[in-house]
Structure formats: C-alpha cells, structure tokens
Length: 249
Length: 285
Image 1 (cartoon, rainbow over the protein chains, first blue to last red):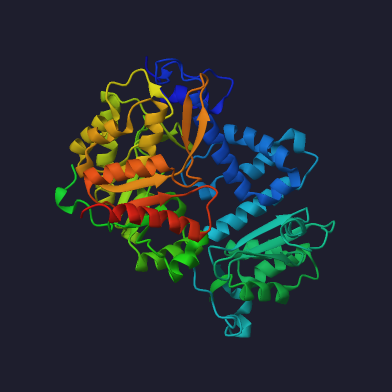
Image 2 (cartoon, rainbow over the protein chains, first blue to last red):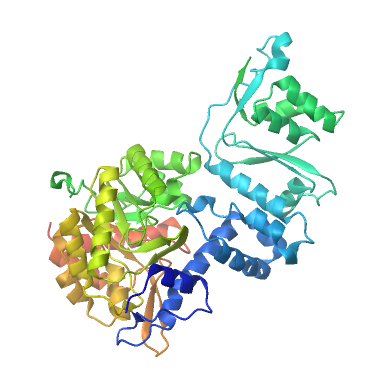
C-alpha cells in the first residue's frame, strides 16, 4: 500500500481530505492524529512567515482575520521556493482580489510596500555615489544625466496614503494618516531600509529614472503630474538616502 | 561516489549552537563554551544586506556548518536546479566547514511545504535519495552529511529499518551522517522501540555531527504518547542520557544545540551548550 507524495501533499493542505491509508502508527493502526502534526507544522510555519513579513496587514486586519485570510492564501499559493524570505510576493494581489476585503482598498498597496521593504533588506550591497555627484556634472549636461540606483531602492505610487498608514501602525506616536495619494521611496543607507514620503510626482520621477530616462526627461514627466514638482527636494532625498550609485553623461 | 580523502573536514569536538541574528553581539563579545555555529542555508540566500554581512563576520571567527532545510532530497521529482545553484553559490562564497541536509522531502509539484516530510524506507526511495545525494555532492564539490528525521508515523510499505537505510545510503554515496539524538528519542517514543537499539544499529563511525533540541509532548487518538520535534525548549533529561550513551560508543563528536522557536536570550542557550560541553568532558578522547 504505497503513499505517493501527490496524495500526501493533497491531504496535507486540505484538512477535509482523509489521511492517506498507507500511513500507520506503531501497532499498525491508521495514523489518524499523527498525520495532523504535519498538517499543523505546514500551516503554522507558513502563517508565521506571513505574520513576520506583513506586520502592518496583520494589525490592520486583526489577529483572527489575518489567520483566517492567510489560511486561505497559503493553501492557494504555497511557496514556490525554499527561500522563505521572499514568500508572499503574490499576497498583495491576493488581497486586491479577495472579495470580502474589497471595501478596504488600500490593503493591497500596503502589503506591496511591506514586500518592497523585505526585498530592500535582502538586496545586494552597493557603494553609493558621493553627495556631490551631481554638483560635479557640468550644468549644461545635467539634463542628459542618467542615474544608476542601488538594488535596495524601491519606489511605489499609490492612490492611498500608504506612507502614513505604514508609519501609524509601526511607529509610536506617528500622526493619523492623511486622506491623500502618496508616493514612497525605500532606501537602505546601510542595512536597515528607510521609508520616505516623496513630493507629488516623485513616484513618476524615480520610476522614469530607474527605467533609464535622463534627468531632464524624468523631471518633465513628473511636472506633467505635479506642475510645482520639487526636483531639488527629490534629488536630495535620493542622495542622502544613498540611493544613487553612479551618474553618467 | 564522493572522494573519501576529503571526509570530515573538521568541526571541533565541542558544542555549537544554531545561530540566531539576535545573538550576534553576544557571540562576537564572548561565545563562552560555544566553539562553532550552524546556519540554515536558506536564510542566507538573499543577495546582500545584514544577514550576509553578519555571517561574514562570524565566519572569520568560528567554524560554520551550513545546514540545508529545503532541498527535498527525498522528493519524488527531480531536485530543484535553481536551488542547487543557490546552495553551490552559498558554499562557494562561505566555504563552510561542513554541509548537511535531511532524509526527508519538502517540495512537490512546484510547492515548497516548509516542513521535513517523511519517507517510506523502500528500495525505490533508497535509489532516489542516493541519486539526489550524488547530484548534490557533485554540484557543491564536497561531501555532505545526511540527518535522521523525527518520525510521527510509519509507512506500511517500508521494508528497511531506518539505521540500515541510512548506512546503505552512506555506502552508496560516500556521504557522512548527522545523528540527531533528540530525533532518535522522539521517533523511538512515537514508534515504540528502544532508542538504544537504534543507536546500537546506527553506523556511528560515519557520524560527523550530533544534534540536540527540545520537543513537545502530546498524545495520539488512542492516548499513546506523541512527541513533536519543536526546537522550542530545553533538551530533556532522557535525551541528555541518550547522548551520554551515544558518546560512550562513538567517542567525542561536535554537538549542536538547536533552538529555533521561542528563542531564549543568549545566557540560556549558552548554558545548554555548557551542558553539552560537560557531556563531552566525560568521554575519553
């Protein structure tokens, strides 16, 4: 009486399935609860990985709801790789599409921010350019400059105040979220990712730069979104956050 | 078959601990009796950042054992080629003293289940496990050690006793063995045999490392004891006694304290390591 790994896996992820028949206890009787040890190990370890990875979503939903929702997610989307530090990459989209939570529109974007912070933490190290990297470019060439970014830099644009929501749930004494769209930048000066609120248009600006657009073109794109786009403030944020590795003309 | 000449690059016959990032500063300041460290390979497969920077510092000071928890050596399907590459990259970068993995499976049909799942001990399983170990040893260019699992149930189809199965895998592949004494105690209780019989049948000459950890106690549907390997508590006295019994037969070995859940402050973990040092001190070299 053989037990295939397909059979084992199916019963593992679905508590309604019977325990495979070829599994026994010491005196040859059906394994029964003994199989539940494995069911429990899988569910608990994956739930814990999601709790660690999405602390703000857990606070927003509350402990019970979070466990219920991750219980559905982990069965639908178990990890595809043993590198658990990246587990949950599809959780933001799962939340966006999960009908009972449709009324909380910002959950998916907040989860995407938590995932971005995790990617940043594990991203490759990079040597940042000096704070004067742009000052050394001849003024007439500034518009043509292309910037290269550290792998730990992440940028997100959201119609929701994701910066404020994150801080309100993670930082003692943080202000209540404002009702506004927010663009955020994640930088990692050394080992700890830092979250920054960017001026309006900043998301489009950094996204264009990261895609290889020259500085002048990226600034023009930001200006179409925000006519009073704060170019100087945005560049200062990138330089002090050690986000830029090189500038090429 | 792995080249026998490079067998057991040396971990010291001293206590080691499973490394947890919250203990980094304690270990760098004063590691006490702890002479080496073990890491879970999969926690160091990011591209950079603090985990790898800390590991680099630790590896300058301590022998490091890399313990894989995700290769799924007993999987019915082929080994994950991407994961083999990641293991090779880590081993090449870190050059650890030893590498070990589990007699278990954890991935199937593109799902990684994050647990060490049990195998039937049959000739088919033996062939598959040996092929996978050959493949891994080829890729990383060194010998690995294979760890005995903790069992909660048995397979009706099994035809091999576990110690014989492990001995045969080692004979076919040239791999070493990692003996988890707590797992022996847990499995022996759950499957009702004498753990000393298991140790007597085990090829102790192939053991390059011993694991110890805490377990939880539960009962099955019929009220029989069901021990669960949780790594969340101190090692219990009967497991320390089984360690003494084992060391008396095997001679001194590197001994690891595994504490992965509800991780204590450094002094409590170090005191478990001190108990392992005391057990080693009783053994003639």
